[in-house]
Length: 490
Image 1 (tube, rainbow, N blue to C red):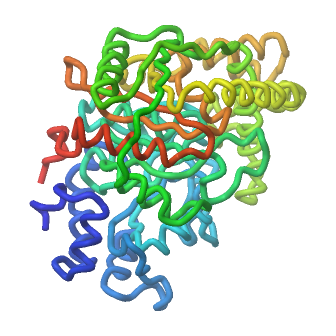
Image 2: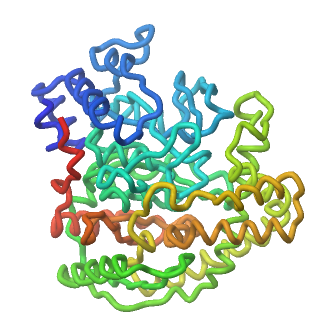
């Protein structure tokens, strides 16, 4: 099985198990062997639950109750992101010292449905602390490395998940996206990354200010579609059926605006032009378009919501862990963002929610003219690990302003920190803000051999159209067999 494992996506592996050609135990042993071969270089997996996964695959489990499901993906090895998706009995550190001993007692809904689908969870993947940064370099576990070039970032926050898939450990892995955290690492690692519409994900967002949705990064479009069918609250089978349906000619708005980013690199512009030409060759009408939005207002509103989430996780950490939060428990950037949330975010939240409402209405009006939008996923190719970390002076400022929260200086610090992140990763947040579905598709590699995804976004709750388009693009420009050298390591 070792030599054939990489030739199959999750659906293909499940078919091998179902037909009796391979056992679930053989599959999990192969996945574990792959992990042990490549993860020392990647640092993608931060928790191993190997023996329990082997027991499930062999027909047993802890106390005979933790057995492998019989769903359509039965026996397929799977990894869960170590953030926001509790797995009963497995530590959930969220990349953070404070939570490094916290062990949930119940599965989240996305985990429960993944188990029902038959996926065999054998570990958890690396993430930036509390998902704050668009790169995966937590102090607790260290950086995750890109299989295409080990000195470069995988993006974040689902960086460990993307590295594990691109490194050939699993064919797909759980991921979550609050500002691009599925699409960013998918772009960096040459994968398909799909962010569902807010109303399609397993558990509806509690309020308008919540931005994150759960799904996965994958090597194939059909894996992503089937998994969403199995875990979502939508109509069963609709997305997997869409993948097999022809994609009618679409009106595609070609957006070259950098959105929250500073400017687009030549590589990204080339990737966009290439995608536009490919779409036209497939019969779609592609035309230049403009968002017509106030991205400065969007950036501020998004950061206000982000700071509120940081405040809830950090300053109210005891609600999760039962332990009072201490400064030493958190990275300084997380601690500072939490204090911004307490000082500024709570007061600015009503205005931010009104901005969100207005922008969502503006985007709905724009989408009456287009079926799909073509935009960048990132403003540039992956950067070297460490390049975006706070400088010593920035860290000093964060320490001081967390202790002495002077509001004008807090606002300036927020603006400077945001610009540093948005300059590279400022093209995905809009679609979290509006709840629209969006996907990063691996159609382009630059001259250095680094993948650069392009992003397509659709109308709210029209995920089926995006899956039809994704399948058409995959057939026209196949990427499944394109592998980094590390992926072929035995």
